[in-house]
Structure formats: structure tokens, C-alpha cells
Image 1 (spheres, rainbow, N blue to C red):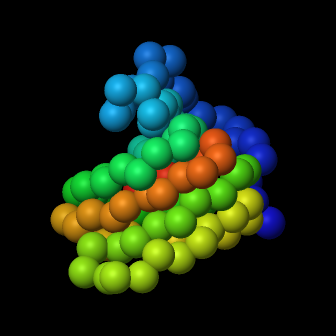
Image 2: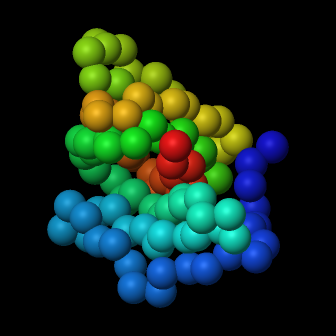
Length: 105
């Protein structure tokens, strides 16, 4: 089951815009101080770098991802999640709009 709504949060209203608008997200902060981002990636192939570990949750659409050091593309669709280590990178290959929640830490 994917997350469809989130209660009791603070949202950063100014969007984070990356890759010439191909990725747009908003940061959210929970009462305990933990942070996530919610956003969309438009059709493209993009490389993301991580500081903290991340869990990418697909809420709608789909993508293929490839973790650093892997030669394999893996499909991720609505309801799927994948983990990315901290201080690493991953690539996304998106053919249809990919809606996601990024869980940090």
C-alpha cells in the first residue's frame, strides 16, 4: 500500500526544481524533526546523488532505477519502494510521470 496523504506536517512551499524542471519536489518536516520530500519526475533519464540514505516510494506512474555500481535497471511502479545508500547515487529512467515520496535517513 502506498502513502496517499500525510497528516501533521510542515511543508516548504517553495519548490525544489532540478534538471531544468524535470524534477520538482517539496520538503516536508514531521513533528519529530524527520524529513521527507514529495515530488514528480517528468520523462527523462537523470542521475541523483545522495547524502543520507533514502527510500524512494512510488505513489503513481513508474520508473526504472539503477543504483551506483549496478548495471541493472529495475522497474518501480505505484506501491513499490527501493533503498539507496547514503553518499551514493542512482539513476532514474522515466517514460511516464513518476510521483514519489523520498524518505530520508
